[in-house]
Image (cartoon, rainbow, N blue to C red):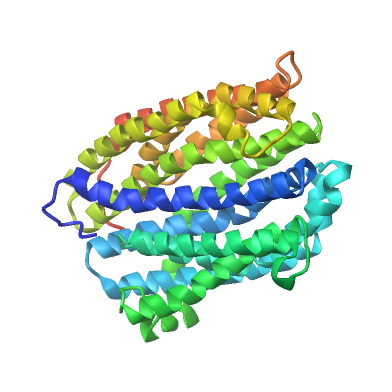
Length: 453
């Protein structure tokens, strides 16, 4: 994507956004189909075991996603300025940091898996399955972190097609390996719920090999070469400091979000394994609406970073307006579809009629608020593209710590019970939009915007 292209902004935005949305939807679909495999081929308890681990996986991924967001801002600005050498130095430094963090997570997480799942309050009847699944996923984290960073930095230079191809390949591999290991096809062992973890690992390892060959063959800007390898072996600590300055606030925000998620799982688990299974299915359905909303925010941030790098700050307002309208059309449309067909969608994951009805009820409570979430992500993403990271973080954390978390704890103990948890989510998303939009309009727009690299 050329930030100085003469094509209308909405066309460039759409060309970038469609593969990005497709990637996120495919990523959600891969997890969904694996959940369907687990729920339908093994049972509700196995689905609950995988659902219990999700918040801790999100917690462990938080800093790497934050690191990626920091490097993507710098890569977007460097790409906007057409400084390819700096793009590769930023990328190499980020990859080295990701691998190092992944090794730490694999070592610590692999050793203390059982303690982690116990703290989560996994129901006794699924604890053994949850521990086995979690340990395999944690040990595979170095490769998964590398996969996340590579696809993220590619988007920073305007390439959403290659990450889409990568996810298609990862999904295809996972969708063959998972049922094969559940049922013991082709002479393979029957691994039960662990099959989903091995399927995920097989998927991203295949993609990493593919990307190395594919990017070299096509001589792409971020193809592995001597410059990139040198940047990995001798990371630029000044750039790393800047990446961390931008990325750690985003990572910290995600850590707090994931801690809140862990508390929520603990609250849900008190209502039994049926409620935990409903939580897992609800998360899958919401992801189909939430990921496109996040995609629009990511696209807005990258476009803004490239505009800042190209010294075209006059484009930022139009980028923001385009993203806001697209969120209304795309996210709003998906929310309407999800309300209309909620029973059929939930039934994909769960066969028990009572659990289906419970999940559908909870979905109706929270689904509309994802539109507010999407708009808040747009405003915070635009601000982060300029290096303004602390205000968006503090505003989001305030909503999580002062509304979502205490609201979930309190309302779950009232007559609302389980429903109260999702009422708190909806309230938090709504206030997040109000605060982010207000800061963008009345504070950030009055600041001088300058490139960071």
